[in-house]
Structures are given as structure tokens and as C-alpha cells.
Amino acid sequence: MSFAFYLIAGLSVAGALAAVLLKNTVHCALALTVAFAGLALLFLQLDAQFAGFAQILVYIGAVAILVVFAILLTRGSETPKDGVYSRNPLIGLVIAAAIFAVFGWAILNSTSFLPHESAKPVVSVMDIGNALMGRYILPLEIVALLLTAALIGAVIVAMHEKDGAQ
Amino acid sequence: MTPLTGYLLIAALLFAIGLAGALTRRNAILVLIGIELMLNAANLNLIAFWRYSPHPEALTGMMFAIFSIAVAAAEAAVGLGLVIQIHRHAHTTDLDQMNRMKG
Image 1 (spheres, rainbow over the protein chains, first blue to last red):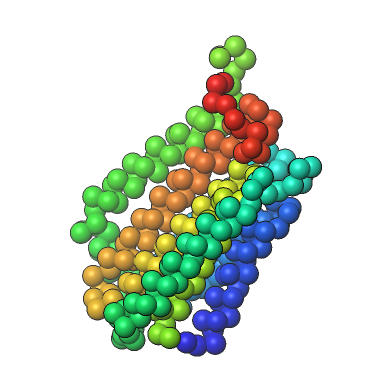
Image 2: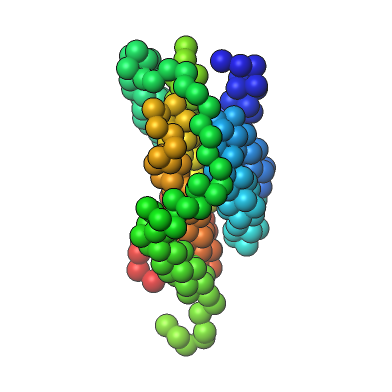
């Protein structure tokens, strides 16, 4: 494990923790951007250049901005008077800790079955494009349909209702 | 500790953090943020397994992650649209106060 891995992993985990724990919702969205950037760096560290840059474009460029817009449109930056956590936050924490414990136990117990160091994969963006246009053409078309449906659906859901339309 | 184990542990930690956020926060947008973190942790798993698989040139895990990113973007757009519409209707994004579905 290299020093860069620990640095980037620490950055992602710190960003994720801040995104979940901070009181001000706008700060949460900005911390979420840090976590996304850390994950993009982890993708680059894993020699997945295309996925890393797609992560930066889609998550930092679109999803984080969308979240900030939604927070500002709903005036969610005002801290509510009865706290930011649900009535029984302990139950959620216990469930999350239990899930992490199970995952960690499974990962650490299966170390000997997992593949070890392997040669750096040589995959160019051209290979990815060829795969998308060849073997994965049907999923690509379905994703295109899904994105169109989501675009229309999101616009219809968030559209202003005309007076008397109800 | 092999590199793959390290990546899997980081992904598990991020998933647990996202789950804790989705389960404990009151604000609907913060719950969506937690779900995004969980999706991202799953993507990290897919990319890590792709990188250390015997046949990375088959691109299976990479394609899975790319499609997952696209689906997550669609999910975020629709989810935030729903939150904005609920706020316009009920003037709150507090999940504890969203206790009826009647319009």
C-alpha cells in the first residue's frame, strides 16, 4: 500500500464523514464534493482513467451542483430548531456499524481468495468506446432511454403547477 | 494487506458512512447525499475488482461502473426534483414531517 493511497483514502473518508455530520446543509454538499473528488482520485489510482474522469464530470460537475441547487431552492441551509438528526439516531448508527463490521469481517477473512498484485491493465478510451459500441450496445441504449425518461420525469415532477390544475 | 483488500475496506467504510447518513439525518437532501455515497462506494468496489481481475481487458467491471454512474445521475435528478416538489407542497424537507401521501 502506497502513501498516496492512504492520503487519498483519508481525504475521501474525511469528506464523506463531513458530508454526513456537518450541521449546515451547504457545508455538507461542499464536503460531498471533496468525497467525490477523493473517489475520482482512487479510480485514477486504480488505472481506471475513463471512470475517474467520468466521476469528476458527472458527480462533481453535475450531481454536486444539483444538490447545491436543491438545497438553495428549499432553503435547507437553515438549521432546523429540533436538530438535524432523526429522533433515534442511535439505531441508524448501530445498523451502519453492524454492516461495516460484517463487510470488514468478510473482506479480511477472504484475503487469501482475493486476487493479488496483477499487471497494470492497458485499456485505452478507444477500447472502452469499441466495447460500448459492440458488446455493450444494448445496455448503452437502455441507459440512453433511462436518461431521457429521467430528464422528462424530473422536469415534470419539479414543474410549477398552474393555478387550478389540481 | 494486499491493495485490493485496502480498496475494499475503504469502500465498505464509505458505504457504512453513507448508510449512517441516510438513516440518521432528517433532511431529505442529506438522505440523498448518503445514498449517493453508498452508490459511489459500490462503484469503487467494481473498479477495484476490475483492476485486480485476471482479465481486465474484458472491461466487465469498468462497464458496470460506468453504467452505474449514469443510473446514479438519473436517480439524483429525479430524487432532487421530488424533494423540490414536496418542499413546494408541504414547505418542509424534514422527513419526520412528511407523514402523509395525500396531495
